[in-house]
Image 1 (cartoon, rainbow, N blue to C red):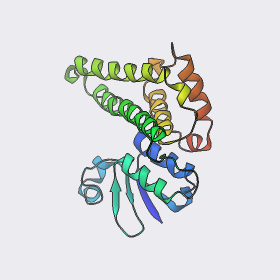
Image 2 (cartoon, rainbow, N blue to C red):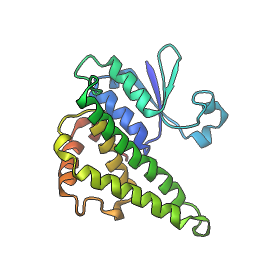
Image 3 (cartoon, helix red, strand yellow):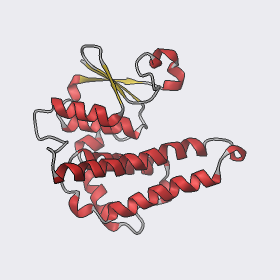
Image 4 (cartoon, one colour):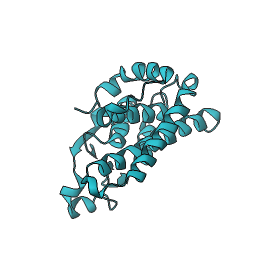
Length: 199
């Protein structure tokens, strides 16, 4: 059985877990709750980057970084692929994944920055994170017409939006983005999203 090191609120780990469920591989993965800072050097021997997630394969090999893990799981997937074959559909899916991951890349450090003492926070950096997310959300509002098929891109976007709901509910990202809000509502009803929702 494979082992996935994850943290319940990590949107990157949620993306991996959702891909595993969509690919029919959920039963082949043991979830190992891991807090890298607390695990210290022991986890550093699993993932030298000290980040979540990391997937330990059955032969002991370790994969890290959610795009790599997700593509590996889709390689094991015997059903409809979540990474389309090379061509326009693949580039669109990867573009969506980049937007979803980009929202995570701005939101996770924003959350960490906001937890620092007020005197140590950088208002300019926080404003930059907010602007990056807002721009990505605005771009997604105009792309919902091409987001009907479940793939690596739509999963990444759904996990990013779920993280915003969990960590920054006061941002009200749905305001002014009715198409994206309606799309997210449908995506959030999928079993893969329901089973991985942060508690």
